[in-house]
Length: 226
Length: 226
DNA sequence: GTCTATATCGGGATAGAC
DNA sequence: GTCTATCCCGATATAGAC
Picture 1 (tube, helix red, strand yellow):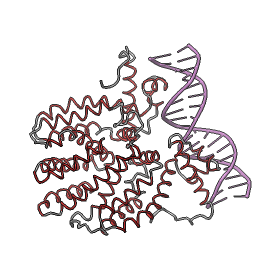
Picture 2 (cartoon, chains in turn cyan, blue, purple, brown):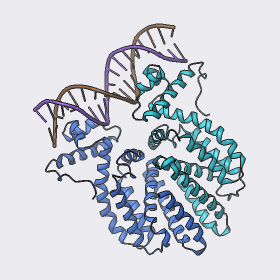
Picture 3 (tube, chains in turn red, orange, purple, brown):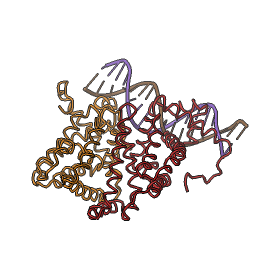
Picture 4 (cartoon, chains in turn brown, yellow, cyan, purple):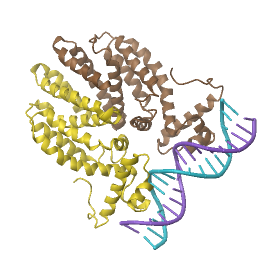
């Protein structure tokens, strides 16, 4: 699966596509998402408006294109860092850090992306059908981070933990959007503190005394997911 | 405080305002937020489009008007229910239930409201300055629910707990938006389970063994809020 | 298959006359 | 305060060049 590429990967018009994304990105960055018009983007890319719509169904799709592009880079970046340590906290942190860095220069874009995501009926919503490959890939990433770590995860928690961490990451990104502190320090602090807490809770949850509570949590997750 | 009324409450043109909100609400309900145009609303209210914009800066503002109107009713409704029990879980649940019921017939409207909320620069964002009165009122509501309950809250947790529960409520509403299950049963299950868990965790956190962990949580909240 | 040019529509938002 | 006219922009459609 992955990004649908049923038609041949296109010859050299791929470059036009890139030019449009580049132009969009530049303008989004300079003026923000709402202030940038499709006419602007097309002009900046040196193509007709129609061309932009030929490649992208909507303005929001352009944001998604940016996300897909950078997400790939991000994966390559975080891979080595994750592998460097067996510490669960450090491994998950590496993923979060890369995601935050990804948007460090484009925080306003994140608002546009989130607007897409907040509409449950939008095909590009993070919980929608069309984004399943991206979502599962993201979750798998956390799964790898967990499985390669030295932390022992209770058996009943194992199947759901990756998805929970993925959700946690979404929450962090949400916080990030609202974080107006210089260089988003508050988000860093949130990640520092909450991650420490999460790892500690996971470890605690493995204690025999915590069995009932843990079972309750797992039951809740299962019930809600269904 | 509340909705700013610095200018004299307006004479009888208040009625026009009401008519517009009524019309909007009716159409939103019938056709959904996106499908309803400002032209529709104005026509339904028997005024020109410009008139609608005279009273409301944007279409989304109309949703906020709806929210403010119904929130008042909701408060009157949940008051008695809360007072009926000393059980913290039941008291908090009463607040959540009323909030969910509020939107039961207007779930799609919630998407519009959330779109406002997701833009950190929007004046009506739930974390913005303009909405401080509403927000504080909501938080106070949880404070009352906590203080009137029989559950003992650790001292260091007391100042922050109302705000945390308020945030938790926002999270529930977010989940609600995506919940496509019949009659939003999954959201009900989520509330049931998570509330039980929260209350239990609060009680657990009071145990002497849990002191360090609790302190860590409190420290995190303080750090992030600053 | 890739793209230009242009016309058109629908809808949010605004300006200015009354 | 209210209406009319207008603007702007996202999106679609079409016809045709290469």
